[in-house]
Length: 75
Image (cartoon, rainbow, N blue to C red; front, side, top):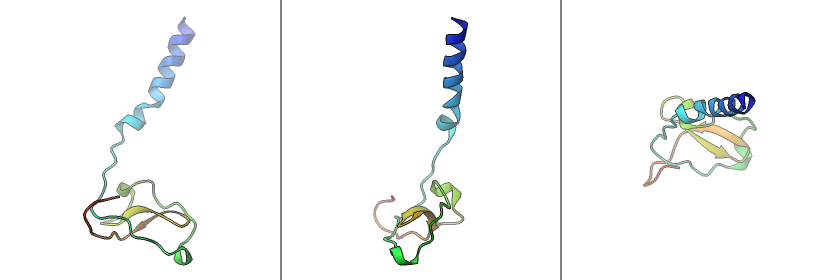
């Protein structure tokens, strides 16, 4: 019984960082990126990790911080 409670508590505590992380999306949308001018590296996982007004966008090879296009809906 004690093992079950400890296991459940451990699993529940593992999800606390996921619940407390708030992802804020910056204005603008991700532009189409040419597959010929990108590098294969993961610079970010969301907009909050990009400096200034840059957005974290999918490129042909990973996630990169790039200048957004300004339109009606953010991605």
